Image (cartoon, rainbow, N blue to C red):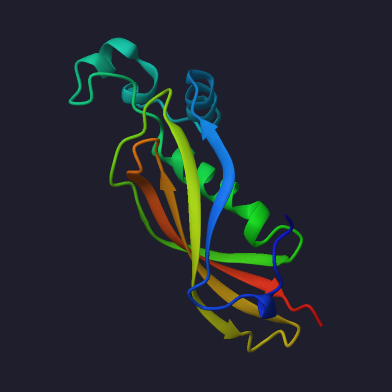
Length: 149
């Protein structure tokens, strides 16, 4: 499903995104090394075993990026002018290799663009949940979207 235009959204509208993703060791390893993050909790099994988690902890910036990615198809695909910002990013629960994650989104706010009459700003609340329905990441995203007419 393609994203919606600004004027097709309503405050309070919610979406449970269909795509789910099981996190693999390769996801975590590649993301951590591509972003030059040498944190042993993400890369060193022995160091991770000695941590409070007892195992490899998935890189939280991967978790955040996955949350946004899982939401794009239903929210802004094909209608986005620009992402304006991400706020209140939190990771209240850890993510581990093998966790299966899904996303849900809600429209928090709609406002007309002052500088672009053919676009408006939608503020989404995005949540990422694991297989136990625990929120593992949450954020607000402000997106400038085209209007349908």
